[in-house]
Image (cartoon, helix red, strand yellow):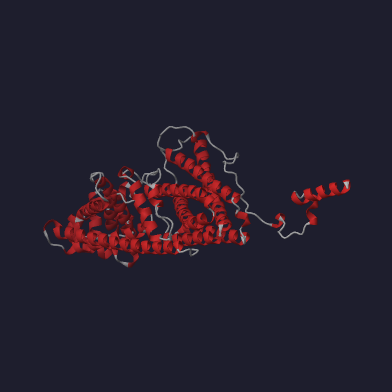
Amino acid sequence: MAAAVPLLHTRSYSLNLFGLISRIQELDRGLMNNDYHKATARRLEHEAPSPFSPTEDAILSAALAHVPTHGFTTTALTHGARDAGYLDISTNLFPTGAFSIVNFHLVTQRLALAKHASSLQPHADIATNIRSLALHRLHANKPIAHRWQEALALLSTARHIPTSLRELALLSDELLFLAGSTTVTSAWYTDRAALAAIYAGAELFMTQDRSKGFAETEEFLTRRLEEGEKVRGGLDMVGKWVGMQAGGLVDGLRSKGVWI
Amino acid sequence: MNVAITSRSFFGQALHRPTPFLDFLLPSFTIPSSRTRYAPITSSSASPNTEPSPSSLKSFSSNKRRKPLSKTQREFLDRGLRVNQAGELAATLIYTHQTPPITRAHPHLRSLMHRMYFQEAGHFSTFNEMLAKHRIRPTAMYPVWSAAASVLGWGTGLMGREAAMACTEAVETEIGGHYNGQVRVLLGWVKEMEDKGEEVGEEVRELVSTLKRIRDEELEHLDEAVGEGAREAKPYELLNRVIRSGCKGAIWISERV
């Protein structure tokens, strides 16, 4: 830490806000190593409990197995209840009906990402990790990809939109956290928004993808992520340039004796 | 003649070292000190003696806490640590922009400004780490606070040494009070855990001691600023009021967004 701090201070005698912020980002990137972000690190002394009760879990996972044949419908839910050894009436546990299968799939697959994260390369950069994790998450949709349009339809109905957006935000946050991102500036928000948009785009593309092993979806995702990096890099450069110019101007005026 | 000498030496003494009871002979241009209202927290850089320091804070068992923190406790920490990070960001920027004009006019303040800056930068990176580790989002007002803090630092820096120190005093008073509140709540949790016979987790213990250390350093800055003449700033009352209400507002907003 002591070695990193002077970095922040080298040219602090100016008003270069953008430069300072990007230097702060460099600083906290440098400070944090990957060990810090083992998948085990959760919120402060708190292990997330499973969001589903054992009964719900049994019925919904059995229902998910019927989705490839029956789609995201109440029929699949009823079949699931029967398979799990419950009466047909027990589908009343799920007031949102077929949507509860979609939600179950999203939540369980999001939580399952943590397991995959431990198999990531230990010193890979964040962009590689994000790509690997996002691909892993997309591959989890493989068995039900031909039915996923139904799920998207359910997700975009007015009463479910808050849940879907929240779930997308949580997924984006999970991907970035597991990939080892430690940004805690305003880029925290832009990173998450950009990744959510890219992931949602790739998921939509996947529903139309007829290539073998969804190779085209993979390419699509890679291209979008690269573009995102380019845009971010470009904006960073512009910010740095503006910061340098402003700092230079202020320093120049000071050297001429202007009292600023 | 004898009388003349005595009277001259008497007046000489009276003029050079005015004794309190002769004060009324001199015209007073300054506001009597009793009428100036100072900030309510006059601190000492040491932790107050009355602060409880439970024995479990000193035990070094590295046991993990078994029972998770409750939802309200986690929400409190989310909000608290977010505000702390925003506060340290602002402090770093204030000192960054105050330093050039201040050190040019008063080179003897260079070491003080640099020491305060480095301490704030250390606090800032501590809270950055905490936020990343515990997955707490930073405040959405980040760019706004950055701009506001830069303008505040630069502005008070240009107004001169006293104004800059008054700014430090006002900011550190608010932030010191804020940290004090957090430490108080955390110590309350520790006491509750002890009463129930639960293990106080490593992380809570560490958090309390970090917050105490940072709080003490902030209050040191407050003392130093007062020592450097913060209260001689010209519109002292105005500066103090405006900056402190600004801080309060920023804390209130950062807790929420």
